[in-house]
Length: 484
Ligand code: MG
Image 1 (cartoon, rainbow, N blue to C red):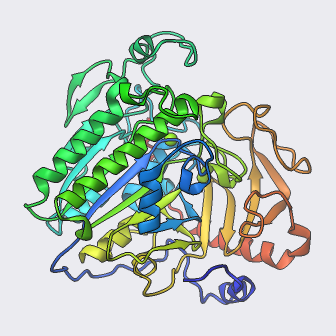
Image 2 (cartoon, rainbow, N blue to C red):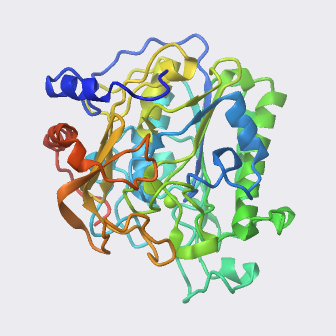
């Protein structure tokens, strides 16, 4: 496991000679069934920023359970999502593929809405469907946002059960709503979102004041029910801290960080409940738990949105704050405790889970993820050297090793005056701006992307252009699901 990447220039030479494997070139692997495959739980927060957790540096939000999880496991500091907004980010995590490959990204409609007719196509193989072939029991709890009608719902995609709000918690607005002034009783009634059990609507509007608590109880119940029946995979996608914010009675004013802090601290409590259940049931040492978030904080909503910490940018944008997420892996006795600065992405989870369970990767498609289990176990190095930063269907930026080049820039979602751009030399516009001269940053030395070093490294720009050209050549157009 490397601490930093002094080999970047050597890597660039290798890349130009065609000796480096890029994502999207992964060859199918034949799985060998494992005798004792691990249980797997993915906890996916919504719009939680890189800087929102105590263990990632937040001075007010107290997250002792996530902090402990990180100290007992691995804290990943260069871990990315597949897109800076909800729907495509979730498609990337569950399929191991960039959302553009499944038609789950768009320049016209950034996410799915209640009037959308599309969703994750049946031709895609989710983590749940892949693991079912190895005998896993599967459950989805929380926000789905990959299509709210059949055949796009979780139980159409390999999950045995589903309990949650099928899209964002701010949808189905009944009237123009002010997030900041409505009392929580009125606020939840102003968003007429359904709560589903499997495919059936069981509550509308969903009482979001207790949603984190109820998702947690559902997961704890699933663990207790499934633990003796074989391995299980649980996907818990919290509806929060996406606005509008809600917390249960016990967390009202519990945090010195205001309502956003309360929401984060309830999510931290939830993590504590889940890990404690695993310990009490005696299955902690056979369960891998991953915690991360779908995209950066939503700055539009000021103190009701989170923070990307020292990273620049936020939700919707392709600076680091939009797509680098606070990520923790935990598996007592198996994962080597460490802080990992290697690059990883949510698209790596599917190949990694397949490797850990002995599940074959389907052979008929391109994957954008790598098996990162050697890094988790401390037995080998990571293979990833690139990250593609998509906004909709366009690649705005590319990371190669330590370096990241921006080819198109655009403001994040939100009010730019609330979070001034930190580099006045780089004017950002509300619309996309194609740069004649790309911006270049060393994002290990300069994670805040403050100091453009493009003129010092033309060879790096050339190498990244080559990476981008090869990547674009491998993208096959498919039917767009967000525009249906
Ligand atoms: Mg989100």
